[in-house]
Length: 248
Length: 263
Image: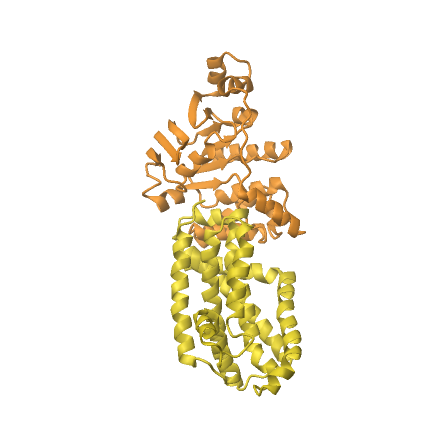
């Protein structure tokens, strides 16, 4: 337990010490909120879907948790290149504990980041329908965070240098975001496209957040929770497997 | 303390370590001296459970690193050739993480951390992030850290690479002191002849994966009929220059340097 705790603490400390990075990573969600919120708002309203800002805020929260989680998962690559990983891997502790400590720590940082974006959304005028269900939204954030940190760890275990980073960004992270329904409703879509969005784990995360925060749902809360739960377990297993295969 | 017999490591067709055998006694300072790419780091990796040998046997304090992995890991401390600190954390936090990873009881951890950090003249800077340290200080911190769980052996893989003569001198003084006070066995690699000569009781000269000579510095000189260890070394290994290809780590470091003003 103490091993998991100390590695969790390390990730969290590193996050809180990188203030510049925290502020910088708030820039993107703010830009989305302003550009899309104001830019697409009138059309969305005319189409009869209501306030776009209200609609997209859960998507933006989901997005920032996604980015933060995957990046901190992949930061394993930096630990590997700058050496700290070796220090943990020659220690007399099972790799599973190392992987769990890292993952939970990174996921915690991603949660904090998501909460900051949530606060930004509130400032920008977003209002949850019911404040009593906000804690459930945090549960969803936690699940999204753990799920994608584990995925990031799996990727970080496989990459050996930064060459593959752009590839992951363009062919994995961005598609996960854009196909998730963070920016548009998942209703009345062409069938093939709807199928693809259904394969995207973040769709369920964003839908869960949106259901809890705004009351509109595409899949239903139970489906969201079950799907995310299963995928989280899958990604943690895959992440643990690849992490255990790391050779120095 | 360390017993190696007919150790071989192959990577595909390439034989990095070719059938080497040697022994290191308890409390001894033993040096592996060899040019770049001679197989020093590969050997250390096999001794420290990080790499499985292709064939041959290794015993660390009577245990096999391949099967009793965790038991062996508790018994040694290691300073890698590349840095392995978390430079965003403070020196003290780096020590703390190490102690927890090695299950050092809390009271002992606090006492030993203070003692080692004072010994290595780092105590006054304990709350500064490791990224503000000089190369020599980082190295000292790594050695102090590797001693935290009272290991019986420490492995030092080219610990003085890139340090100025003052830091190198100071570092070896500390290592000798540790060897004397804690009776810790020291296994080091270097390609600085004068360091091996000054610190180590016995030296193995390794080249192209094989040990070509083994003995005290005086014995080596006598064997080759040379005046200095450097001459003995060159006579044994030839004067061809070895080029190592740049690893991906070097490329990444360069990139990080480009993007981050801190490093």
